[in-house]
Image 1 (cartoon, rainbow, N blue to C red):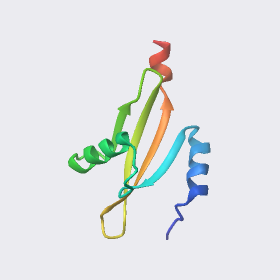
Image 2 (spheres, helix red, strand yellow):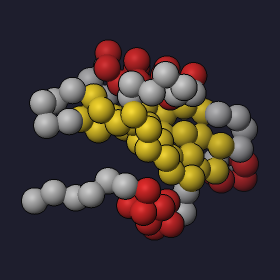
Image 3 (cartoon, one colour):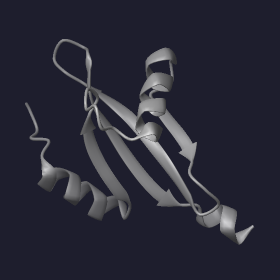
Length: 88
């Protein structure tokens, strides 16, 4: 069984999770510095998710998605508000 990972899938995921969600190629030379840092952290760690605090209002989560050979192919990023932090 397979699932198509396209723009519509990412949009649906963002709507379901009520977050800003993006999908990018790991090999993209124009990948943002935060994503590059997360990819490095995920490659060297045993944890499957990397979380980075963006600022006092937002936090980002990153997950590597692998191709059929087990190589990192895509990075999934989601950004959500830090509601608990802002409420104290």
